[in-house]
Amino acid sequence: MTDNGEIGGRPDGVDGRLRAVVRLAQEMAAAHTPQESMGAAAEAARRALGGSFAAISMWERERGRLRVLVNVGELMAGEERLPEDESYPVHDFPEIAEFVHEHWAAGGEPHAWVETAEGVGTGVGVGSASPSGSWGRVAALRRRGRGSCVVAPIVLHGRAWGELYVARAAGHPVFDRDDADFATVLASVTAAGLAQTERLEEARRLAFTDPLTGLGNRRAVDIRLDEALEAYHADGTVVSLVVCDLNGLKRVNDTLGHAVGDRLLERFGSLLSICGAMLPGALVARLGGDEFCLLGVGPPADEVVRVADELCRRAAELELGEGVACGIASTGDPIGPVPSARRLFRLADAAQYRAKAARSLKPVVAGRDGGAEDAVIRLADTSPAHPPERRRFRGRR
Image (spheres, rainbow, N blue to C red):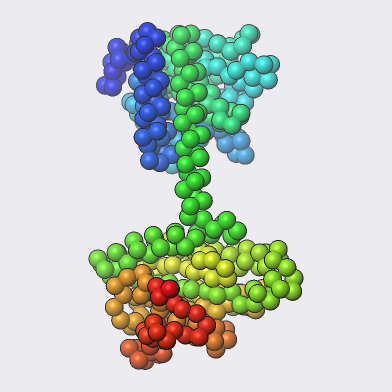
């Protein structure tokens, strides 16, 4: 079947099918996101099997359902390319949990099978009966004007992960056993591609995640802050940075041990995450050591201050530690020009420094105590040759 749905585009012979397999792997490898990867796999499988429609679904064991992740080809009423919530109870399609498992457990490999709108299937499992007679699939074929489908389990990390489904319109040749065998191969290549995508996504996640708390790391903040300031310079989007210094961590480490100190860091990280959720789209991160931050993009400065105040209140109630010192710098306040992320960080650092020095139970906010003569702003602009006693601000190291 060609891309416009006409029979004839299916690759024939060993060489043609080998090229189709290579093409599927290449197109998955070229994708930039998991969604793109699955879409590429479904489309390549549809073309390779001469289908009018293809889908990839994931078996969500905890919910007992097959959730459709992507649909490609000729979509019928109720079908979307990237459905938000198209799912089907597994008990309507028991073969994914029963037939596949039984033949697999018997020492074979999971294989694809064919269903038709007439309810006659071609089983290609190990040995005995076909899983045909899945009335959920038969009814779906009839309802959507499709004559037959081939279903191939996708096995990932040694478990049934989901399925590859390819259908042909009514009136076109029914899938046969050779098609089912080929679909099994395509599903295996799809599984390999999904495994690679998972590994890449995990690597990307780790590159921007603090391993102890699970929050973002400094790299994630730098990238997000640069993007936020571009929006600020373009249309005035308010960008607010809260820098937090967890008080008493050294004393906990020295008296109770670093394992307990790590628990304090994790507990505060969870608290920061809860408070950050009060600001839509906020990023919470651990900068390193006992320093954390919250980056708000869009909400007014007063809303960010309210959330930071709540964070200070809750941190003071933690069983361990001695509360938190918070400093805030927001483009929604009179802090002067903010040409770069460095400037906003220096202002938030200076505010946090004053909060710590004063043992303040509330956040200190740059620009709210005298405008250009604000003590925080003057502190941030101190000559690099005479940095504050406690530390140098970021950008001056």
